[in-house]
Image (cartoon, rainbow, N blue to C red):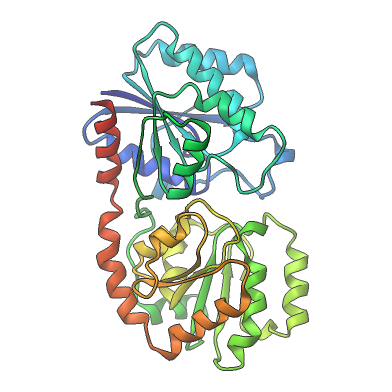
Length: 371
């Protein structure tokens, strides 16, 4: 097939761009694949981070930067340029209603009077942080699709609530295997200048819905029984000062390390390898690429039962699953993890469990929809 992927990709940073790169590599084993991405993804005033770009060679794939998310005339011209390439399949990676009008216009221009099929790969449908117009913008884009891929039960439900007759397949989010192999735990700790016996990891962009404040509230109860370090690694997309003040108010300063920046891809392995367990205290979610990064490094996960996290993390097998917004239950899970010495058992189970989260399964699902 001649396939064109439209959406966030290199040189833009973030989990969806990484997902696109890995999808490109898998599909390219059998098909001719091109990626059309943004020359302007967000206007600067809408982007909370320090930079939208990623210069890392680990996720570099060939892309064309054509799309200006703020220019409707550009959307039409990009769609026409895609149409001239006669793709058999147009895959659109969808995550935010903000892109709905842009993607919808591109698809309509690209497929007018053609036999091109359109597949939306939905990371989210209903966003974590809702805004007026979300439903209308989402329908503008998704109404152009012939097929859908969803990656969790919650996104499946959202899709069916908007499009009850949608033709789709549900495939779990594949493992992010772009960050290299695990390294020795003690070596990773030495290189990161960590000398603690126990380390739990919170990783990724820090936004309110990811629940870091709940994990901080759980720390005093944990520290009354165990001496450990909470390693918080990620760029703040929320007000950093309120987290710093919470840490001080709780008196846990000596036990929390903030690495408040975007982590280069080549360093990711060190942080996950240094930790005993990854903690995802999300207050809401669809699925999480962080869980799939943890699985890549054979790390157990303690997560809340929101979105698809309870599907990925098997309670009592690859980690623990607790209710959201419940610091007491979260602290109990961390304490149980250590008191019951579950790290090696869970890690062994992760090595088995992650085999089903393959990119080959994603490719097969896309091919079967087309057939």
